[in-house]
Length: 299
Ligand code: CMP
Image (cartoon, rainbow, N blue to C red; front, side):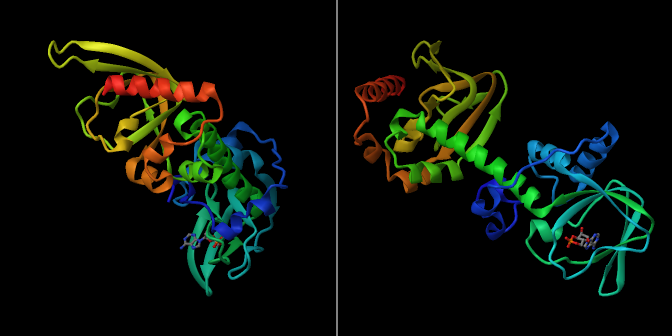
């Protein structure tokens, strides 16, 4: 259900065992070609939602090729093996002999069969001599998958750095890593507002946050703590306390990994269980206990 998987090909086409050996090779290209390819990818309805890093890597891995006027580039019904960006010239798209459209320089074609793991949906013929940038299916899918895998392993690392989660089995952490959402904040943004209801738990993956609490009598805002990368907050919401007991604001740019209560409970089975686990070391136990004391002091 994660957003980052939404555009990728069918799971069968992304079998990691088949794609780990693929080497990504960069092909040098002029500044104009680099820009043309990136623009083409960003203008394509099916590819514009890819992450910036994926767009860049796809651009870098595209290799040049050319086709003469009148030749068929893609044959409807074939297994697709390449995605193209047209650099120069013009092509015609036909389906069952009927013309669908012509495509000019600066456009992507041949993406559908690769993205959706289907056969070619139409025939593409060169109306002039054409120059193309091409990327093979396996390279394309490797880029799609590696970005996902790198993110997944980063998320796992962060989740492991949360003391209360450290004793969780790897498969549970992996599922959490699959479902969490990444959120971004700028300096001064409220991530959590005291008094608001909330059902989300945050792990800081980049940057720093400030925890502060308003004194109910004097209404004075009291600074409580600064939290940084790998630290976490909002865990009271996981226990079912849905009114936030303190405010948390971003100090500079901040990225958080966010998990909601229902998902967390489904995967971990409630915090009680997580609290009662065996800790690997006294140091870890002390850290968890210190966090519990701290969080009970803010609630
Ligand atoms: P694919 O199915 O891989 O191969 C044929 C390509 O033709 C297809 O991807 C699209 O890039 C393109 N194509 C198919 N149908 C249309 C259409 N109606 N308009 C423009 N391009 C199309």
